[in-house]
Length: 243
Image (cartoon, rainbow, N blue to C red; front, side, top):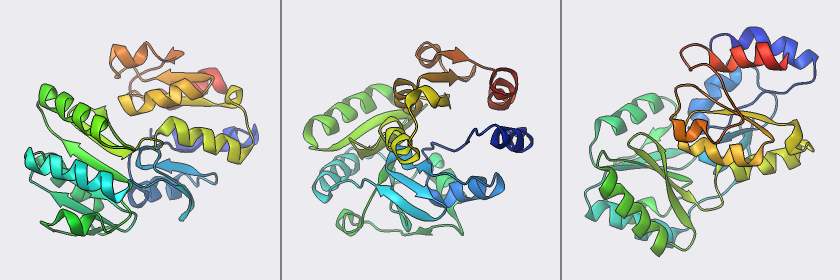
């Protein structure tokens, strides 16, 4: 939202903190955190991590046994994925969407090409991004992984993108940890979201705002609906209803 930098000073004067809850990793979020001078913790990897600056203050990785099981299933089904640690990413399979993710990470995070799943599971993996256009196939794959894994859990993030994390690693769960860290209640929290991975935050915060570009399913679970991302919906709502 291009208008946010101009609103932040007024928000800070009124004691209103602003931060991020993102599916992206720390290396990508650092640009936004620095640009907006975010001075409170921010959530990354769909809730698998929380950082204060560059210091990780919470992490929830996927167990090696669940990783081995789920990544083997994906590879056998020829479904491409990208596994994330806080230091590197591990691509498997080919897809334009994966190339887009890796392009954003160039120069920020090491990209390790490997054909061996066992090499991946030796590391602390916080998130696996899966891309596939066949909704029915992915619905079956999600159910199979979620049924067989003890703690890892796969959800649809947006469009044809799915995310595997530890079952406790959701934006909503980590938002609760952030509220405890800041010693604030849910009644003091307003969240914005436009995709499936944002709904868990809607359930935690007292006030939630869905972007108009979100699906009706997501809009119906929010307290309010604002303008679209392209119409600077976050800053528009803050300007008209918060400040």
